[in-house]
Image (cartoon, rainbow, N blue to C red; front, side, top):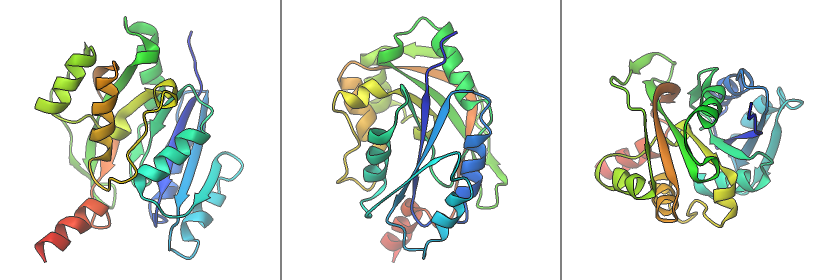
Length: 227
């Protein structure tokens, strides 16, 4: 059974109220071969986020860097990762315990190219307190080649960034998040990956809980635009 090392990268910025839950769900994965990397992106919370992370210091890798935005933190974590695959977890989102094991099992079962295919799962929505807001209906289980993936991103929808399992070799080829982008940085990278010949397996399982709350950058930006 193929059991590659998977690196879960958690970018952290002023997220002390949520990062503990994120770490707990990462540590609770039932897949046996995982490393967890937290990248503190210059938080201005007087060390509150770091203090939470230090409670798990013997089980995670904790890194700090000057603030550069989410794309910068993700790239920093990916470059430090030792795993053959990368799984992104935002500091305010959650994984179900089978997230990584389910995706690795697809690598073993589906007729795909593991080094040139992203595994994509879906997410439900929760609020700031963790209460369910929406659970997606309808499942899709299909493989798209690079051209199909590119068309899917352009004409249908973006994949859930925290629902992905990405071969690190794709990053190592020179494709990283654009650090000049504050928004749609994930969609931009997935398009570049598709254009470089990377396909995707769209799996209908709901393995991520995406949190919606007033402290998110996108929410703050919308409020600023309204003003």
